[in-house]
Length: 451
Image 1: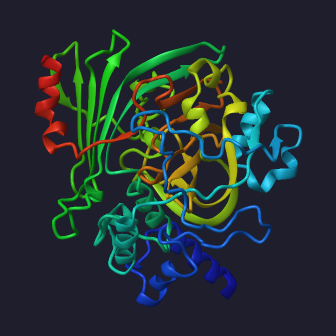
Image 2 (image 1 turned 30 degrees about the vertical axis):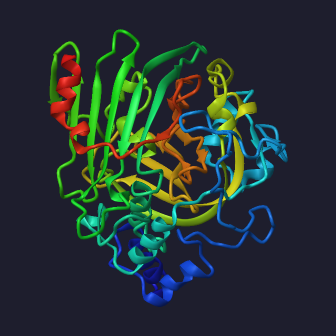
Image 3 (image 1 turned 45 degrees about the vertical axis):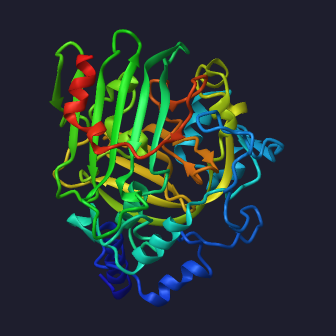
């Protein structure tokens, strides 16, 4: 092996394993106030002018809007610049994910309508302030699957490896305490639509409590509960999750099953277990685009690229279910796509580990630090799955929300699902007063089931 090959091999190894870097220097962190946005994205637009500069995002809600109502589309007047389908996708090869290209080939009517790029992502000032502090104090622990020294903001706004990027996604700003009425829709290969589950999703991001601090933080960044109310055969079921900022702390997972009339721990709610909420089309670790540990895969930071991704989809979030959830794919005419810069992370099955998805490629929005698209390959190396979030723009938080309207396509069977859909329901993703920890306790889950 010559010197160039040795250097290349060393760099590849550095990218594929958790880095030794802890925090960045004060000089580097200062870029968050100059050339970078407060969250670490490139403040400037691209050379072609197709991605604009970030100018603060969208932070003012429509004065006529009331919390809980569907949020209006602030870009309703925008028209598509052009569309991409199977016929012309070769002209846009470098800006399309593998999964999107596969859908174009498999589903003749599928296309993406590309709109002007709107860098709408924003966060409260205290999140920006904490992100700046985190830049010089946060570090990876637990073989890259945990974080120390971070609170209330993006932990690694100037990331050095894939593990830091993934921790940024886990701790992305999507509001503090929120509730949403949601339904999960599945569509079979022959085009039949059915509701798999419906109910109320509650989230309390303890990590983002503005009254908290790094010194007071107890380590669980998120408490989540999904209480099922429909269909009748599932009504009363519930899933409860306590997610820790560090993999070394045990993750809390519980289920209440009506037939058993008891709360039980649910260690199987993770990894490649078929997700019962989506009737088994999705996998549990695909939920919210990343749910639970990912230590069965080794992560590699490929770099940053420009990609067409779903973005600012308030119109889709307000559409009628029958109009949006159509045979084959979501209705292309209702889904907005934009060109954005994303971080690309490749996940490959670690030696000695087992998982039905042997390889994945993730695309993380530079402005919001959320996974927007990811693709999965099976053990034979065949492209199998492509997942997405449509992203909801919530100026009231303010945030671009990626944990609503997410789902996935099975490219081999032709089935797909849409999760966390609030369409035609009374309460869209709504900020609420901080929900008490007792609300997310196994005991309360049992009490609710008994009632």
